[in-house]
Image (cartoon, rainbow, N blue to C red; front, side):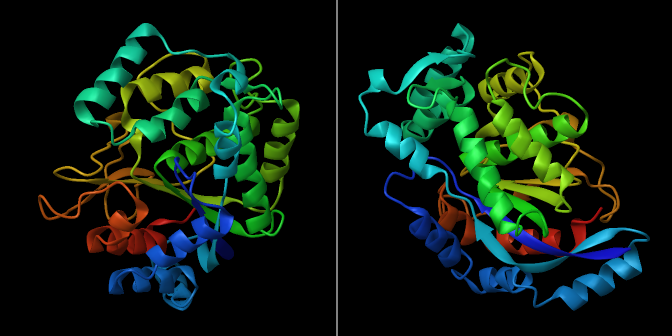
Length: 329
């Protein structure tokens, strides 16, 4: 049984052209103060309920590690896409190592034109070359690597160079990035290359992942919300990158002890990842993965953005409960 100094590490989504690191940090900071329930969540993250968390785990769980929260930090990878948008489209990428199949393209068009009705177009503009392993002309590295690498660098800094433990919190495209980074860690610990497609990730990136996994810093879990990884085409693209097969499923990143994916009922962000990952939940004893439902009043409070999520008390209250009681190893 051991208490671990832990940082909550927040990763933003796509379409950040109007932001910089300070503005993105301010967006997270504002979200933690939108409602009374948000302030209660922030109280946990800042460590003001650590004694209660400690007593809970000492009573409920034998021989486990549990978090003692020490604040939060945010990643910033938005500048990578911003710099590419400044160039003509023909000058951004040299090739794509994992282009979408025709059926996957058709599905994306259907989603954009029939379901999302344009709301996600800017997000998909960034997500598609991420998943298709588009190689950036200037760096000769994939957009996939550049984004994941920046998040790993920021995580290394947030954990004080591999000292503190961490909980990853991803919103929108940030969910994809967090999942892939944790999957890279899982594969490297298992003695495998971080990705199955040659050229997707450089040896330098593999060394970063190896350094992170060999440090004393370990994850307590992953929390995702507004997570469009549930789309079939995204699942197929992701399993192709990591495991060399186009399959409609996700492989649990074993390096992370827990994964909680929040989704909204009756519209908003109804993204359930995969029933195969579900665990039967009995209290907080066996719940490695769970799709967590969040209620909203129909026809109100619709929105994909961070602030729309944090205005839902159901979300912040359940996230607070997960941080306090359900993250341990």
